[in-house]
Image (cartoon, rainbow, N blue to C red; front, side, top):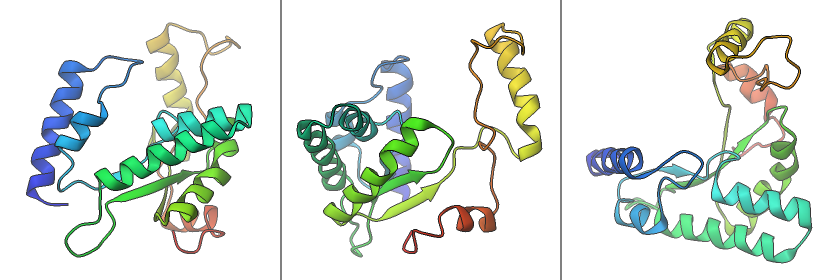
Length: 179
């Protein structure tokens, strides 16, 4: 949002690289709280703490998992509170990829945003520039993972992880008028 936020982002990025490690939280609540000024944040994709609790809720149906998701979203909304103009600095992220966990939690992300009065941002993961680049990306992934394209057990990314046009995004989220 501003120079203070830029400095905080550089600090958080450096700390996460130096202190964090793969498959573990790269940043804790205390660190985020200390360096949240001037930042605009979204809850993040399926790797986020909110998504974690929502996935658990979808699987278990346990209200405690929903309550944890709400608590986590409230913490983020408080930590990245509105700026001096009253503009929001925390948004609930909504994505529409052909990923079952994402599809399953999307209704709950919308419910969470409504329940807590949080704005929504609709976005799209982009692993390559255009739809035509999927095969090249898939080939690079095979090389990096030392897999053959014919291997049915390998990781295969969704074909919709490219930079979509404004029109494509508007069509994808036409049912979310305020986003």
